[in-house]
Length: 251
Image (cartoon, rainbow, N blue to C red; front, side, top):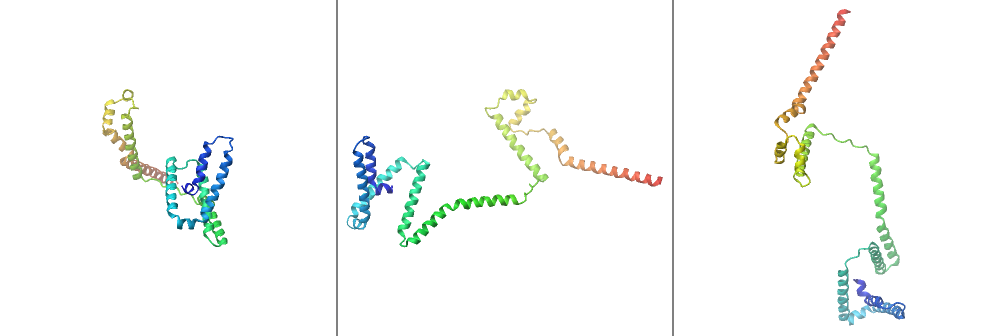
C-alpha cells in the first residue's frame, strides 16, 4: 500500500505497458515516463516541508485517495501466497528498515554499528538453536537411562479393568455399526442369546466364570499358592531332618 501511495505514477505506467503492442516505439516513452516519475518523486521529497505547509489539503486528499485504492487492490487479491514473493517482500521491508535506521541516526559510525548488530541478531538464532539441540543430545547420551517403574498389583488390576471396559465398549460399537454383519456373527457364536444380552448392556461373564477366574487368578488363588509352597518347604525340611538323624544314628 505504501508503494501505491509513493509511486502511484509508476504503477499507472506499468499497467499501461501491459496494453501496449510489442515491438513498438512506445517503450521509449515508457522509459522516459519511468525516469520522469523518479524525478518527480525525488523533487517531492526535497520540497516535502513546503508542500506540506502550503498545499497540505491536496497532499492529504492524495494520500487518502491513493491509500484507499491501494488498500482495495490488496484486499481484493489477498495476501501473497508464493514463498519467493513473500521472501522478496520480507527482504525489501528489511532493507527499507535498515535504510531508515541509517538515515535516522546522525552519527554514521553508530548507525553502521547498529545495522551490523541488527543483522547479527537476526541470523544469530540459527547457531544458538543448533547449539541448544547439540547440548540436549549430549546430555541425553551421557545421563543414565531411568528404568521404567513397574506397576503394583493394585495398579495392574485397575488398568486391566479399565482396558477391558474400553475394549468391550469398542466391541459393542462395532457390532452396532453397519460394517458388522449380524447374521454372520450369530452363525459363528455358540450362544446367540448371551451375545444379544451383551449387546443390550449385560455383563460379559457368567457368575460361574467369575468364580472360576477368582479361584485361579484372584486373592484366594494367591493364598492357596502360598500355602502350597509353604507346605512343600515344610515337607522338604522334614525329609532333610530325618535323613540327617538317620545318618547320625548309623555313625
